Every structure is written in structure tokens, then in C-alpha cells.
Image (cartoon, rainbow, N blue to C red; front, side, top):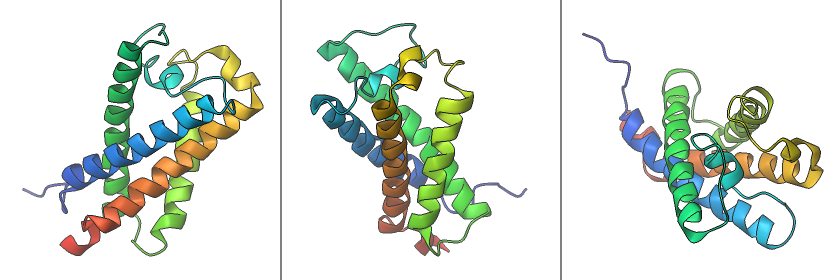
Length: 154
């Protein structure tokens, strides 16, 4: 029986995606702290499951956990894409493309499904920060895949 996973895609992808998500979360929190964005990562990470959230340490921790789980999922997806579709050449450039894809998926198609605060779409600074954070996530995830030896498992 042939298996779809060839290079421990789930293991490497979930680790790389989790690391990328932590970097993304820190970037979003810093942007909000500096006043560059009104909404932090919890506006998107928590509203995937909850109908609302609060700015408390409990919700911040819960949002971080959600962000890491979501990041791990999309890291596994990126590992599968690199394993079955893309080559590792120019992996950082391909990571940028993946980040843009995630941005369009997340804020184009899924924003209403996940019931993000409607105001996010009308705040240019928040939109730009979200785009940059998803590109950062994808580039860090791709870079981490390289550093932890994903392509050396051939």
C-alpha cells in the first residue's frame, strides 16, 4: 500500500508551522503594541472557534495556542506541497507566494466564515499587518523546514 506521506511531512510540517506561528503571533502583538494595528492575532485565531474574545491574559494564552495549532496545520500543508508539488529551490520565494495565498484565503474567502471583526477589512494598517504577518509566517515555516532537515530526508 502506497502512503501519501513520504518525508515525515506531518512531523516536520507541524514543527515548522508551529515555529512560524509563534513568530507571526509575536509580530502581530508587536504591531498592536506599537499602534500599527488595532487588532491582534486573537481577532483571527480565537474567532475561528469562539464568537468573541476579551483582552485578558487567559484569552491571550488561548489565542496563542489556537495560533500555534492553526500554524501547525498550515505547516503540514506546506510540507505536503513541497513534498509532492514544489521543489526546494527558491523555497523562500515560494514561501512568500504561500503566505500571499494564505492571506487571500484567510481574509478573502474565510473571513465571513470565521466571523472576523468586520472592521478589520476597513483598516488599511490592519490589512497590511495581516498580509505581512502571513508572509512572515510562511517564510519562517519554509526556512524552518530547511533548517530542520526536511529536504535532507530524500
